[in-house]
Image 1 (cartoon, helix red, strand yellow):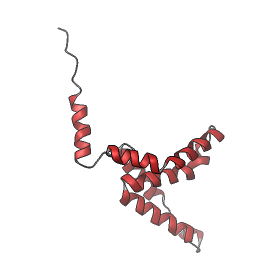
Image 2 (cartoon, one colour; image 1 turned 45 degrees about the vertical axis):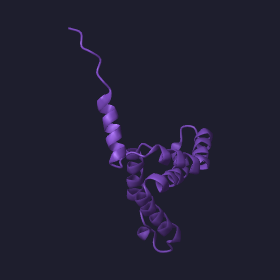
Image 3 (cartoon, one colour; image 1 turned 90 degrees about the horizontal axis):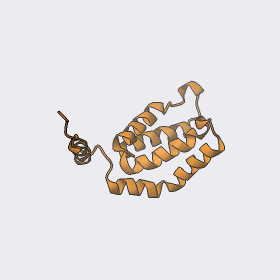
Image 4 (cartoon, one colour; image 1 turned 90 degrees about the vertical axis):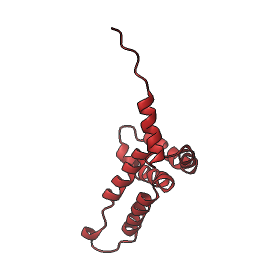
Amino acid sequence: NAQPPRARLPGRVSVMLGYLLGRRATKEQRVSSERKCATRTSAVKQCLAANPGDARACDAFGQDLDLCKGRVVCPDAAAAFSRCTHLVINHTGIKAETPDCSRALRKLRRCLKGKGV
């Protein structure tokens, strides 16, 4: 009893449902984010090439790239991360009171991953 090959319809259906329910980025959003964020993508690649084995050295470039993409496909999460980073930049108080933006960054990156960007 040879089994017939599995149809790929369920995967396509789930992708289409993702688009319809707003979970996946549209082609236009992906193209727009690639265009708007091209220089940031290049900066990350150049940094990684200059720092092989030390991706942490390029984290600031990666955050900037994620923020750029997020402004296109995850505007709420991008705005929250941007507000937090501005608070850090403008913070002049005690170090212990410096805002921690790691939660906002994780939320932004989760959104980008969910959108497939």
